[in-house]
Image 1 (cartoon, rainbow, N blue to C red):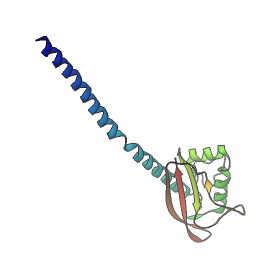
Image 2 (cartoon, rainbow, N blue to C red; image 1 turned 180 degrees about the vertical axis):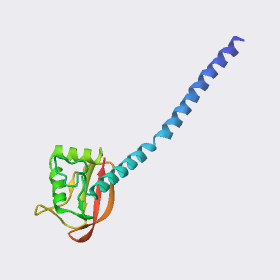
Image 3 (cartoon, one colour; image 1 turned 45 degrees about the horizontal axis):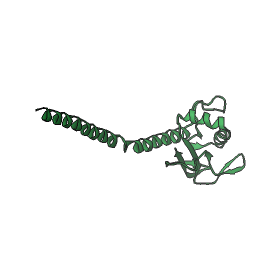
Image 4 (cartoon, rainbow, N blue to C red; image 1 turned 135 degrees about the vertical axis):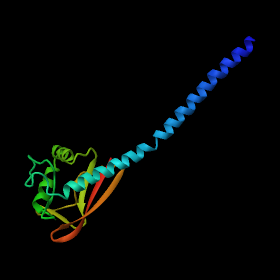
Length: 160
């Protein structure tokens, strides 16, 4: 009788270990794929925040580098060259770029450019912000607006 009891106890421990492994595997596979989807959703959400903010007048309407709460580059539903220059100047320093990310309420890097050549202070620029060259994840959001009385596409890139 003792042999049967010992064998039954081994079966009970083995079954518990097997059941634990199945539960661990299930929880791991259930949670693993969502991390990529969460990153994608976060980048899309943050790109929307940046583009929505930029395509507004900003707050206060006559914002500058010291009093900006919300960065916006539009005036009368067109890109205002003065506000575009203020935005460019704000993002030229590391602290200014960090302040702009805080104003946009984003954690990831952003880069903004237009489909037409962009001139800031008489100088041609390729874009505003920073793009992480070695980024694992990169998304692009397109918005339409008016710059120099021409329709243009504004591209907002978000990278993690």
